Image (cartoon, rainbow, N blue to C red; front, side, top):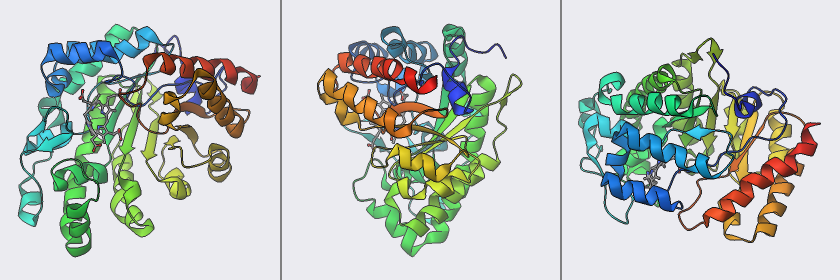
Length: 354
Ligand code: 1CP
């Protein structure tokens, strides 16, 4: 493979030496950027934006025009899989995602197809190819999927949820139905990530946004074991290189040891875990990605630099750190502050890589 001109991100994932700590932001293309809001208006709706490869490429590149980021992330959504399974995803203005159909009974699960990713989700693969072409080797492109459990929460609840009433009811009263759903999702997610890799994704991330809402044993049984199935089904080779995999369980800080045993190359951390302690716990098994509280971006430039410095110091010298926020950047952040954050990571990390 022609290595990207800037390959810090891939080197850090492989725990190889870098000049400065690489940085990207979850949700780096999004509503905090006025140019994103303009593209979304031009597209008509959020799903139209995702389904148009040229516009998806345009918004993927927007944050890279503003900031010296070390990676691009495919502009899409984790809910493309349930949509391709026929649930009818739509976004009400000012609200979160909604599905026309929900999954509650064994018969609902049985009726769900495993999507044919190459045809049903061809718009995603087309976006990956377009973005790779337009990036022209500047930085690596990250592909992604939701974890089976996280996707299941949306499919069973019918949208976002605060208390996960429906899926928890299913988990405790008809666990076999949930297992059947997760089984189908694990196959779908593996196919989806493999297709993104074949289309050109140079690293992939599994977003397990809601695995952290489970009990410790529930996490093992309903989230982690299905991520392991996904990982077992991956063919992570692109242009002669192994494509690294990042697993991010939000609120998963107490389970890092078992996450590190899944075969992932890196673990994403939210801000509730100390990154230095996390490093001691996982040793040299995996790289770590994270983990500044996104709310720090509401504060002053001095406060942002201070917090970046604190996290770098906590991780300490050496390889295997990819700087990121502990969750997505929020729509209310001033784009200038994102710039302060990214520059601070590069500037303040140099001394840890000598
Ligand atoms: O323009 C808009 O109004 C839509 C806002 C939006 C955006 C910008 C949604 C709807 N999705 C996205 C893009 C998106 N989603 C990306 C793009 C790449 C990037 O720049 O990072 C990615 C990686 C996601 C992944 C995603 N979607 C997750 C996992 C990560 C996370 O934030 O925890 C989840 C849970 C979703 C579901 C979803 N899609 C959109 C929203 C608002 C939500 C969250 C709903 C909820 O809180 O339950």
